Image (cartoon, rainbow, N blue to C red; front, side, top):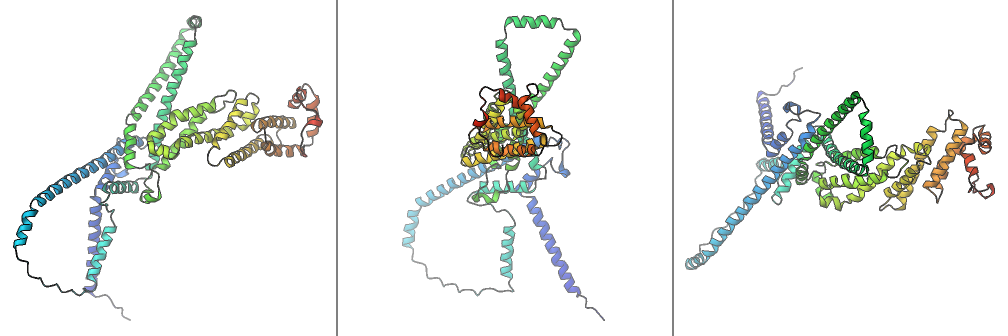
Length: 509
């Protein structure tokens, strides 16, 4: 049985077509590589890509070069726009001069045209039949349309906007995986530098107030006491102070270097519009955005800062006030300069940032609920601030629904804290009873009107105590034993304690 092999002529034709397509693909790739957007993209990522990295660009600190790269890119875009405006102005001026000259000579031309005889009529061209040379004309037109659709076409109506979109699309398409994460690190560093400046000013203000309150006798006493210290202590304290001062100086120098081009960097981002919110009319640039690293940095730094301001501080009022002060003094100005005046106010960022700070405050306090309960009544200021933060986080269009949802979520956190820390076989019954009594006081302080929070949180504790055999004995001991009575005995001794028949008890009590 014999097989038919393709003829040599047909094989040569296929090979010729393949080589022709390959040559066109190479030409196409070379033309794309020589575009302005491609060259700017390669220049922008010089130091990021592995095959073109300089020794000076450390991967751990390469985010420090992002402001310089962004500023250079925005400068090119603005210079190109200015050149286009100048060319357009020169073209309009030349066209105006030509029209003026044409109007001055129109009278002479009209007179000469009137003296000349009319031209003889020209024969009308015959319509040509449509060519159908095996569809070659249609194929050429289709190839031309396909060629145009492969590139980003610059609109004549808005050349600047089209160039900006094309440049942003090229950069984000060629961006390495670490690109957005580097922007997140940059945003965190910028906000952190502003925060450290705020802390320095705040500490200097506190020290200045303290120095003004010190009197001369206190200073003399400190001086006399310091003379009694030995030389070794003096040397140790001096070394520690020098190390701290050196670290603070180095940190301040780094912050000053980082904030030196901050305004220019934010202006460049505004020119490139990489932080503009995406809308239905700008669907082309939905992927050209730094919103994700911006929000990640905002969330991370806010949580970290508020945690350092309020953590384990229960016995004095002020953590919530300091949180709101930091929001208005550091966070809001940073977002304002980054996004611009219009975007900051049109999208209600002042209200959003205050509400977000209240959410972060609640998130940190929810991890400390049992510690707040254990420190009661010293933790009464923290309990009141927790209620205030809950009300602040519920302000807005949602109204009472958001406040109800916040209390419901807080109730679940209380139940988790009590279940994990108290309701287990290792806890003694009298300890559970003391925690139960304290929880009632705390929850009544937080929700004095409805009592729903109290009912939801304490129900698991009541059910657990019913299952213990020594619960009744421990309650009787707590009510009668003056030395080991605990909270129940103290409540019974209170002068404003109500008699049993006047107390409001539910059916479970």
